[in-house]
Image (tube, one colour):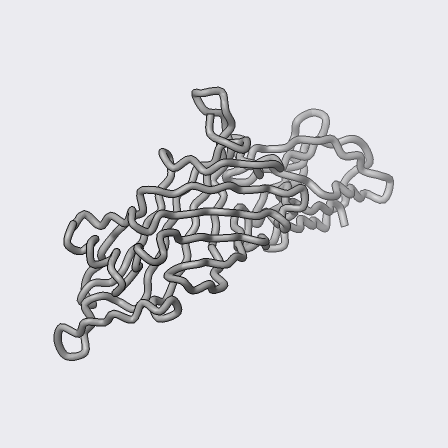
Length: 270
């Protein structure tokens, strides 16, 4: 077999359909092969002994070039090739990160009358992310002011703050404690945690997408994430269920949570 390689991200995920091009010292292309779904590149071609240039490319990744020496057997063992996301998107460095409410959104979407959606958001929240050396041990602590719910309708917001729903007088805070992370795909993770809402604590996982890390105009370093989760109102004893006609509820039984978060490196915001 002439060539064998494994194409991976820095986190060890296979880069599917990466393209490996081999050229000789004159620059002439002698081999071109595509990685399979496991990121494996294998080409059953015998190459003349000598040095070759191996170039690995993939959409969304920065290309990598290296030199491979083909032995007398005609075989080149390239080994593991690590590709970095284009634009420098890498996992954020370990340590403390403070959530930035001014550049983040905590939103929720509920069905209304079975035919449309009501969009709301919480305007007051804060939190901290602790990224561990072992990413799986990373932790999240977030606190939301329940009374800060805003759907753009004052009467509806008043009802949502009442004992029928959030009961903010009794339960002023919504708290999420993330206690572990597992990979779900390239740049995708599942955050495992516990949500305290309306006096009830339940396990809630977040489907998280990591969007990248970079410097900000104020001299800091920021990381961006997007996360979603689906909650059932019944799980948190919010059972208000006005039926308007033929079994159609005014408000749906499930709530989709949508988070767009920025975190600043350090224990607190600058």
